[in-house]
Length: 365
Image (cartoon, rainbow, N blue to C red):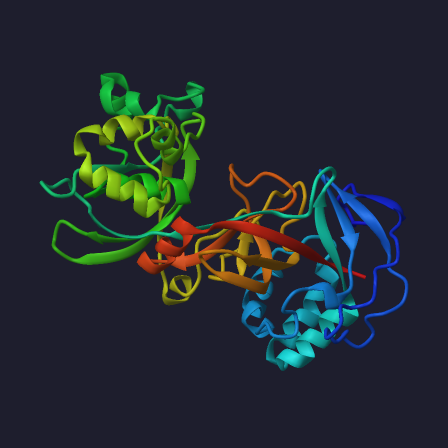
């Protein structure tokens, strides 16, 4: 039973078959399995540790910082374990792995109907240059939330913000900084936050984080999906979108306006410690590159350690991650958005990542 999660136990699962030939079962990976669990719209099927692809090879200690972050705001099921998690931060990977096997039970995540394979995508924190004041090169504004945001639902669309005098008037004086490329502004809004090097009026440069503050309550529409529907593009990855925009500058506004949703930001200072982690996810803790994922919180509670397995044309991943964030497009039982970090390389990986996924939650025994 999931403590405090409204979960419903199912009848005992069938006995799981012995490990595949050539696969060594971890010590103690025997005996009867617990019953399956229904969590939201997903079913958690009990599994053996030997079923987790690559469990013996992952550098689990690299995920411990992410786990320590989750323990800053743990859910009721994991709060009792956080003292042990903290003590194990200086343990060897073998000791950490042994503790996990003793204290946690793997459950394969499945939808209530359908197969156990889902979709893995990626997201990242853009790293951009900006100017505090508009210039000939930097003319694309990023805004704080307007004062009148709550008085009108939904608020003005992206096209209306750029064309209606009343919308522009409502945002006057709410500019945080200006970017050079409208696609960078869109990317920042899609990712929800970013690192920005802002050139101040006196010529000094400050690194800040622009964090998600609010939206205009308009629906999100994928510009890549719009390009595909128009028959303008076959590669709807972010690099493919940027290449199309460079070749068709006269249609960039039309493409951008196909997504009416706009995100407003708040400016946060970045200390050296802040710079070592990503933005705060929906759990309220900073994200760890390569070890944090966004999930559907109705299927996997925040702070849950998860075993992730995905093999595809972009990368192969078999590793321990922590469910620490969510997103409007992250819906479904076997669905995850993988936080790749910040900067151009992270953006390239996140922009191309779209491949099959399997998930196992690791739940307290």
